[in-house]
Amino acid sequence: METIFPFPAGPAADVCREFLERDMRGARLSTSFRAYYLLRGLMPLRVRQFLQGKRNRGLAATPDWYLPQEFCDRLAVALQQSPAEAPPAWPDRREFAFVLTHDVETVEGLNQAMALADIEEELGFRSSWNLVPHKYPIDMGLISELRRRGFEIGVHGYNHDGKLFWSESTFRRRARAINAALDRFEAVGFRAPMAHRNLHWMQRLNIEYDSSCFDVDPYQAMPGGIGSLWPVVTGRFVELPYTLPQDHSLFIGLGETSDRIWEHKLAWIRRHSGMALMLTHPDYLETPARRAVYRNFLSQVRDVGGYWHALPRDLARWWRSAMERDHAANASARTMQTVAM
Image (cartoon, rainbow, N blue to C red; front, side, top):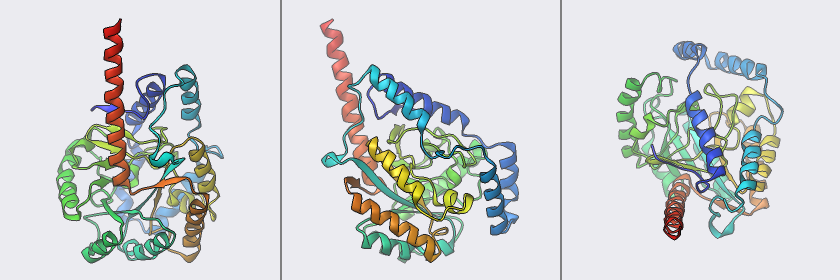
């Protein structure tokens, strides 16, 4: 699997590679989580949320768990060794990229989609909506309406049972159905449920981008993170890690009632000229209070300005083009340097 990192070949690229490879090695379900997913379908939602909250509050996470501190510290050292290295500048020299995505887990969540879409459109934003193709009825009229209004449709796994990566044979079988759903929805993007991931197996998917990875998130069933605040080209698709904590982790798992963590993380990303990619669920922004928190955060982003706002498919296409151009230029420079020697 060919990988192109945000930085040219050098110390910074080595840091990116180390963190990505570490995450790929560690992206495995524990025995306890495999047992949980065997029983998950029998548990009422409130029981699942109680167990998730109890686990999350019991983890030994630091107060700033949502900051990829280790990655950024290591990257800063690498850039001191090679200060010319830098990711490509965002279009129009914007300070950071801002991307909105939603995972729709239930039909109730799908019914809430328009309420969130209205908020986003009112504030000048658009988002992608990742739908589960084999769990609930899909309203194709709703898909058409979202797309007409400038939103994007993606695919969210197979049936959201936590078993997509149970084995390679299971994934291979389900990948055929996922590819059929991608065709049906005219989609080019994917995110696996629960942020489960295997980037090697996912090369079977007919996608332009995936967004199953994250920079750092200790609260996932497959914890870890690739560290990067920027996309990475991984084989046939661009990986767009989510970099703002999930609403589920904040509101359900940790009992947050404000957008303070989103605000702090956004400021961090802006200082590093990274990509702020948000993952929320209409299933968990279902109350007026939580929608108000979401609206308030988007309003603040709009007022801060300085961002390049793009749908994930547009950012992925731009990023791949920029990376391949820079990669080719660096290869040519190295060739000329060798010839000169």
